[in-house]
Amino acid sequence: MATKIIMYTGTACGKCKAAKERFSNLPPGHEVELIERNVDQDEAHLHALQSVYKSSSLPTFVIEGKPYIGFDENIGKIMEVLGL
Image (cartoon, rainbow, N blue to C red; front, side, top):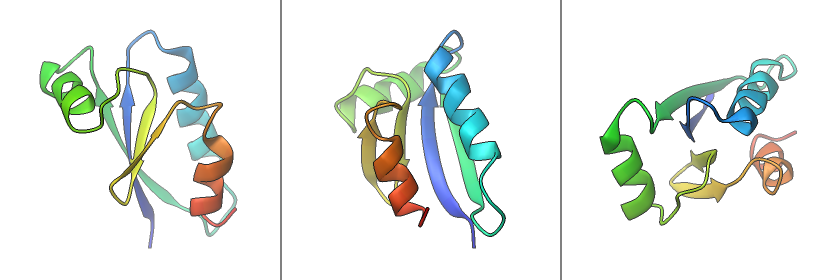
């Protein structure tokens, strides 16, 4: 079963693009369901990011209800949650 990751992104966010690339190249058996929520395309996503997760940083990842704010700062923790 794939791990569901909600990823808050922005249109011009380089770290967001790097994160999507990283998740698309996981080893076999470590599938993720990546749900992208672009804050530039939908103001409701920006509101949720700020009010629910107390973040305005991109990318922000939500796994099992827990937010991970930032790619470089959290990629190790995220990979650990994924069992990698």
